[in-house]
Length: 334
Ligand SMILES: NC(=O)c1ccc[n+]([C@@H]2O[C@H](COP(=O)([O-])OP(=O)(O)OC[C@H]3O[C@@H](n4cnc5c(N)ncnc54)[C@H](OP(=O)(O)O)[C@@H]3O)[C@@H](O)[C@H]2O)c1
Image (cartoon, helix red, strand yellow):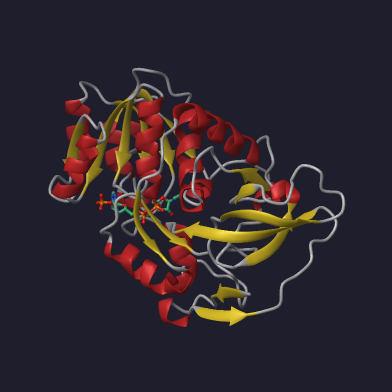
């Protein structure tokens, strides 16, 4: 069987390797992985932006089927369709160091591999009627948007939500917000993508490249600001996210796009607006199960922009680098 490994040396140094299959041990299952999806996190791993141990199998998302079960496993049967967890040891409750130190595709091996043995506890079912590629879009991007709006945000029908850009996490934010009965506002750098956002139900779209004070513009368009902001740029977007939020609103700090690892904000705006600023990194298995239950009831499907084959990981990352995508990029194989 084959896997792809990285040493963080860039897209030209992703290597396909062949190795023998392994037997599941006590409490483990053997999964035949069939799809993965690209997240900005995976791109950072591949280009060395996040250091990883030598010969790491990247990609935090996986979906596939169980082909063997180890001793002591009663919750899964051969043939069950499953998907991975971003944090395989975070089963429920609030995050702790112990629960979050195992990170798929970073501190432990990820899922651009034909088969691997994983703990039976580190999987969930896939939503009803989902393909493997569709399921592989969910564990990182969708669960992060779910946590930001549902677990932390307690979103209600009628709330106003701002999503920033049209990457995988943001488009799930849009879909989850609409499913909750919220009104959605968005930013993008592309007029064509603005039209797609409107067709999906977004009320107003602002171009963050041509309108650098887009937060103030969103605040005006919403008559006083949005209740929830999913912030994807950190230092590059946070000041405008604060401007966009309503008094008492929630800002969820999720990403660092646009060189936003560091930055500055006007603190009085934060506290005089009584804003709640929460940093999050994905969520637990219990939350993934709750999200799957909601998807099964609501029936929404991920927006998949483009699909690549197993051997095309570098090409898929190069496509992601161009920023042309709207929603998720996946790799699927048989
Ligand atoms: N904390 C977590 O648990 C977690 C989980 C998932 C993702 N993230 C983070 O969230 C961010 C998005 O991740 P992703 O996987 O969804 O990425 P992605 O699919 O690669 O999204 C990239 C899109 O973001 C938009 N964008 C780029 N620079 C921007 C900026 N300065 N301001 C606003 N939008 C910008 C662009 O949209 P347009 O083309 O429309 O302009 C671009 O197409 C990343 O920083 C990632 O690390 C964090």
